[in-house]
Amino acid sequence: MTSEHMISNEILAQLGELPTQTLIDGLWVDNWPQAMIHGSRSLFPGQKMVGRAVTLRFIPHRPDILKDKPIAEKSPEYVAFELCGPNEVLVASSVGPWESIGGDIKFFRLSQLKVGGLVTDGSVRDTSELKNYGFPVFAHSSTAKQGPAVMQPWGVNEVISCGGVVVRPGDAIIGDDDGVVVVPAAMAERVLEIADERERVEDVIKQELRKNPGSPGRYYPFNDNTWKLFEEYKSRGNV
Image (tube, rainbow, N blue to C red):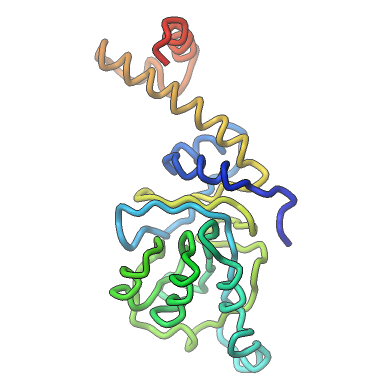
């Protein structure tokens, strides 16, 4: 089931301009839980990723369940692929960090769809090919192992747990060299508001510390001195 909150392309793009750590801080201000997908790192450093989540859930292999799974184009992973485009990120929950969710041939379709990215708490195969596919890939690692021997795709666009974090279809998924962060669709605009202010406040702190070197503890974490300094800089038009 998707959220009633739909993140616009404009808000999505603005979230994608912010560092992942700033987004984490923005969620924390309103007491939302930590939202970094543990163990999912960029396989090709320097890539930035942003998109709305399309989710895919893998389950452990069992012969009777495999027999009941739709086949060919109706197999869950291919159904999920077709929900993706430039503003979507496929988020796949694996049964283990070293288990493969797919590789070259499967993900060639994602390259045709020009997806916003691929995220998993598992691993992927054929990284030499994926490197040329043109979309960001965030995973625990790469592997030569086969996926079907261990697990099979099952759930499409469900609420899932990936890397210890809840992901709901339609949530904003942002990735950079520090990792992958999930911004709940219900919080997207609020996080953007908080994050923008935090960026400006931190810029003021760094400006002040350059002028008057000293301990960051005077202003960070934010305290009364921080806000007084921020108001002074605003009054002088330096923010």
